[in-house]
Length: 373
Ligand code: V47
Ligand code: SF4
Image 1 (tube, rainbow, N blue to C red):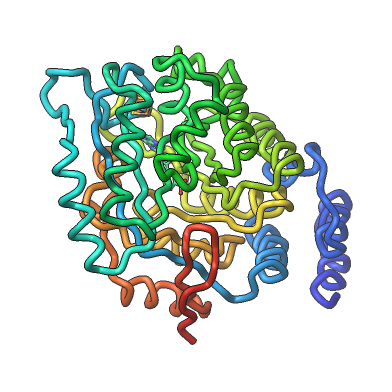
Image 2 (image 1 turned 30 degrees about the horizontal axis):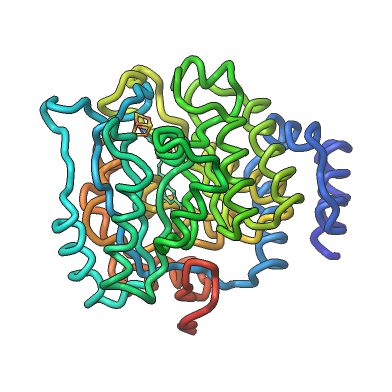
């Protein structure tokens, strides 16, 4: 491997050279080595390693999906300090969409050829499992072929408890209604110490992992996320990644990993500075290197912005999510420059081709629908 020879001759420290050796031999790196990458490795070294893995797994292909994001409500029982969009019932800015409104938005999006409906929202105190099962089955009536990816583990934990169902009973009900997979939200950082400081009282990291394991056992695939760039340190990030890697070893049912950069506008942690683009790219790369059993690393462009998304394609990222129709308010309310998070297929192709990669439209489980050379 030519690149490895160049690295081995360079002035890089011996312990980093060992990591490069392992990566080029497709070996798994340890927790300590992951930490060392975060602490010591500079950007171009990380890019070489992460890009090598990206190209082994996905070549130049860069995936996107035509989808719609629906946020049925921002009314939430929790008080996550990083959250800019949740409200209490009756508070100014609170919203609750009716079933008719949801159906109307989906009908409109179906005309544009979407293949996925992504639904996440606040944990509404009055809404139980049966309300959401009904929502899914109403949507399936008008979109029987469209994949529904819905509800974070935090919403699921609440609705299962409220309706006194075990995780597996709950998933059976949602599956019967038409749920196809679950998104990765709510993971934040698994460390209980950090969770206590940023999202006290919300379902624990252990519960998040148990719910995803139960989903996988029920045949429901999922994604995973990590909220980074706030009060956590590199050990917390590596601990989070290690727990995901362990679960993926057991089930192999995670589709993608999505690092979520903390955005600091209009929330209770606004005094915390956002991390730099250099740090975003280093983080994408370390995640790509560490999570050897995840096939896809996604840059969620409404959160990270279009410019960094394009750069991320050289740092291990192979997926940029979708043409987000309509309302994803989680990030626009947290200060992301893209206030109207919508990209046409042409915009997506421009971003991917500009990074000298090949756009591939995919479905929710990464079947390739259209390759644009
Ligand atoms: O869990 C909330 C995060 C998540 C902020 O699975 C914030 O395909 C940064 O999970 N700054 C929800 N992040 C979104 C989510 C998601 C998004 C796209 C794709 C998928 C997928 C999942 O948003 C929350 C939380 O971690 N979040 N506030 C903030 N101020
Ligand atoms: Fe509620 Fe989710 Fe916001 Fe936390 S991040 S307050 S659980 S909507």
